[in-house]
Image (tube, rainbow, N blue to C red; front, side, top):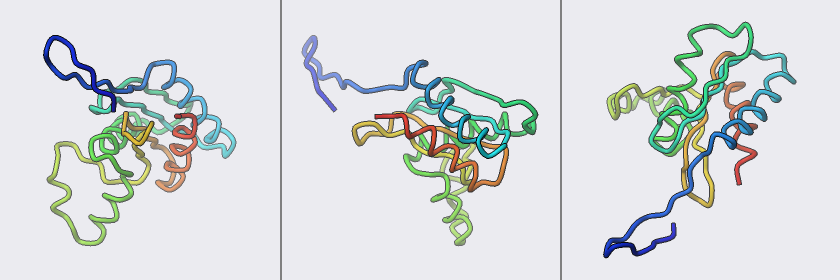
Length: 144
């Protein structure tokens, strides 16, 4: 992360997900879902977990509209795949559920990484959790 001095203070310069990049990520994720005939919701959030883009494919279960952004937010805030948190809970580490408000430890959320830094998250919901993650990986594949 570059540091610049301005007005006597150090400022951090960070990359962030633009709307244009979020649209590219959603297009790649949707292409993966469509190839497999899966209907899902795809959510892209910034590093703070704030929604940038929500995309609901036709005939996707309505609950996924809430689940996908929560998976994306969890991945961004914890800087790791939601599968890691799911595995921790399955392994008996139930205190993980109380680490943050609205944690969603269910596979299908991935951090978005650029230059070795987490710049946001992508969450997918609508099919099997492993399939959700497969779609999310396609979305992260466009990020440099």
